[in-house]
Length: 409
Image (cartoon, rainbow, N blue to C red; front, side, top):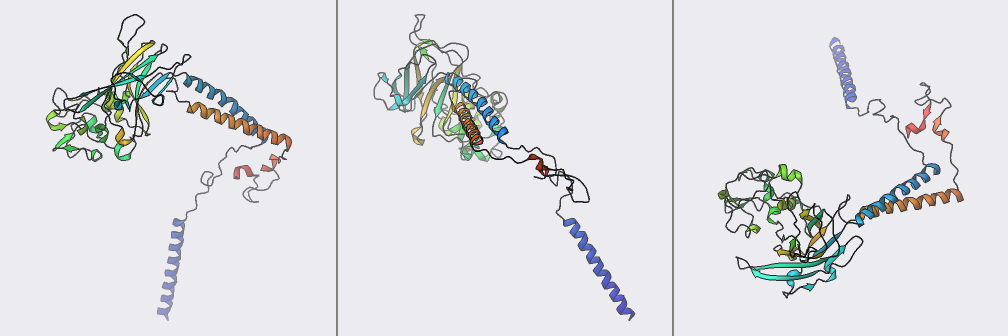
């Protein structure tokens, strides 16, 4: 009997231990947040009451603010002067004489005196040292008025997707910084242009290999007001890239020219490969720096040159473009753009139009709500019902606190 009694006692103790363990485990497994104002979402908050007296004036005020802003932005951007020409088809001309450019390839805007620049073009064909066809497009246009600086020369590409994931990652940052990266440490993003004939490609990757290599001459004034001919309006290629790129991202390489080769598409720039005399210094090659900063859209502009000090006087100008970059293979176009700018950038009125659209929408809604409120008003409830002042408890009758229903929403 004592044996059975001891056994029952031990069994009951085991059961109690199991219950205690279960209670402890339940306490630890509880997902209930602590009873604090933050965790229980009882912090005080401001919730506006949307009534006709607050909503209608607010919409009218928005319209009054956004409409003048939109008009000011459109007026500022509208005064940006620009002339552009799509020269993609210049190479298909069959005459050495200047011909008028079809209107579908040109656009222009000048402040106050918006005369047609009367674009003309011709192509000069020759052969290079590789016996390949070399085409130079000569563009002539009439500038109807003086254009004040700063003046920028851009090239514009369409249908070129620099934002492709593999394309964007196709470079080696350490290599651009001038470090002589070994074969084993070269970024995998540069594939398939990492090595050629067991030599490192510098700079490696698809971005540098697809570098835009059309060259633009500075505009030449053929009939200057001073009586002299062929005055060149100098466009500089200095300080056209981001300062962070020039000062920190790109450095002169430490590679030995014998250990590296240029990208395949650079064979005309470096027909004999790299030497100590022609090894490029990426820290000063700002055209390449601009190209390496990939665009987010398939249509984009890249700055080629600028003049921030001299006025571009009226007269007849001529620009020569050496056409090396093919665009027909990807169904794109290439355009020369000469433009000024404003505090909002180039001549793009999208932002001003959006401001005006928002102003019109706010004005229409404000007037509609006002008419509805005057013709068929809706009875507004008493706001005092949002605060219970009857002495009813918020957390139960035992606490004796008033209930603020707005804080519970």
